[in-house]
Length: 616
Image (cartoon, rainbow, N blue to C red; front, side):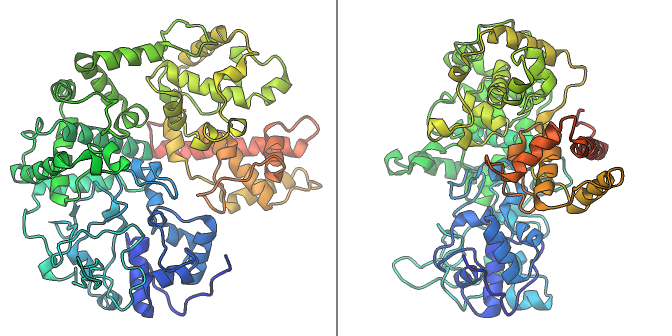
């Protein structure tokens, strides 16, 4: 794709603005369609084909082109995308480019606040309107805290939801104000054109109560970058799971809310869904029937209010409530749950998992027994060993530390230690499965291992099945040693928290330059210089230290959405290997390894000062 020519004029993104909203406002300023703006800024080839997945993320080249054409920094462009919420909001992390939107994201529709669209009466917003906000695409956002009203999901004139299979409806239509409805009128070719920022678009009923306003503010506060990512991530996962249970067992929990006026809205939504003929549903809709949050903001408010009240029950109150609710539910293997039970296993809080475990046996004895059998049944090559494991899954890193691997006594030489990456991946998965009910795929997802490592042609997979380790004859004993090693740790590290918090961390160029200068002072004749290769390698080394992950998954310092190049002949791969195992003759790399480790410890110390729960 050729480099786009900068547009004659641009706009400064408004606070919280989405990519689609920015395209609408910029197109209005330049008197062009939003699709044409998308084409001219390099994020699509044809103005009528801008995929909805662009609201999540842009490829590195697209992001760079868009930033250059609109005269924005790449950081400003990234603020327009949902991907910036991935560390805090599980559905944003689960979404894949060109993939299907998970239930927690409104991929084909949006909600809106008429007063926000009307703008703040500044000159630029009087001309082009206020922001279409990124948060309105999140299924858990049902109200506008600033204006203290429910959001709307449909047009007051044509009564249609604001739907589109692309980034925007009517992409090639120009001359419309950003706040005009772009839905096509039924049976006609004309667009609705109703202004969504006028008083007649304001929701008339129900009225947003103070309790629901507080609930919405609490939910939005979890998305604040200052909020610890691991806390927000598990809180949203807990909310997702309980909301699915409430929907699947409705109306069993209908009396829990203090908002009886909203119950009718949720009841109407669920009743309508139950009456739909399964044969007319797509596979995705059929699979996510109970996991999907309603389109209606008021019905969503009722569902989330009930779910949050259940999660707030003291003591074993939630366990007792789940026991009563799950009595009415179909088993977890039934279509309709979507990824609800997978979210519970991989992303939910330890407390919720324990409460669900207490409630499950009473109503799913077969399922519980099967889960128990899976937990005890290790791969055929590994004999069963004593299961008094005192570690938690979050204590297991994606890449086993050398001292752990040494404790297993399966690498008799330095060469086999260096070539142990395939076995270490398998061992980390096995340690997760030892103390959970996760499948191999779920354990891989929990550890942050990409799906591509265990999918596709077998010869290309990086994550090999246990059969590939037949040459290791005492695996049962080896895993006993490893379990003892991990269980004896006085202060185990919460690697899951680290993985979430440092997921997009990269080494700033200025810090890398300072480290290189520290090498040149005692070694003036060294050839070390700050280039792309060394910067990538140094950043990957520290990132792996911080997260406990393999360095090959480290984000690129120039584009955190992409990983560094560690292909077989990559100079970065060679540099990382030199840093990790410098050898006696490589004095410069020995010093570099020490300085990078020291810098990583500084980063961890700084983070611990603001997040005391992050164990070392």
